[in-house]
Image 1 (tube, rainbow, N blue to C red):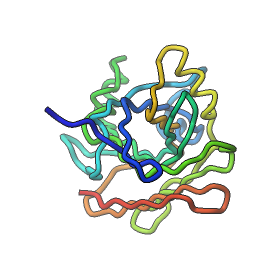
Image 2: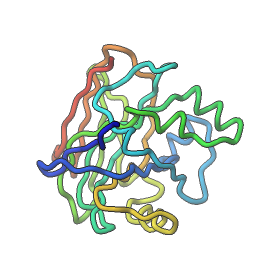
Image 3: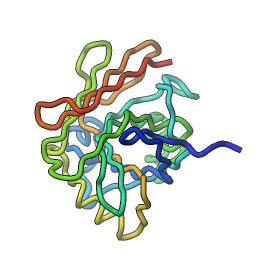
Length: 206
């Protein structure tokens, strides 16, 4: 029987029951995938088993990366921020979307969610942003100011149909610049609060 997966928050190991993900939350990313701008948040869920440690480049097909500002929820409020990678089987996702079917096979597979450490943050989120570089070249840049739906609104929307329990993770969508993962690439992640870098993490693709 597999064990419940943990992430690091404020020097503690915590165990999210689920990861609630937001799709199509940045206009430029919507355009790069030729999607329509949604009239309400696009929500899907990854199970705890999707939390991984290795950056996978191939699993039945080539994997795509999506960098996301991610938040720890405690007492139904944001208590911590981290950097997340939403790994996606894009070819499969496009097929499922074309058939009008759910995305879970393309989005919620084991190892499809990678995270940095999370650090406490409880006040103003408006200065938060992320940068992803791949082999020292900037691939993605975005943050709070570019989100269509801000984190507080997302939490209210999610709780209309789904209970957020302590240590659940909210992934808030990805800015433009998503793409394929190649074996051997070095992914370097940073989260900034204003001009201050508060999180750094790196992975090498296998």
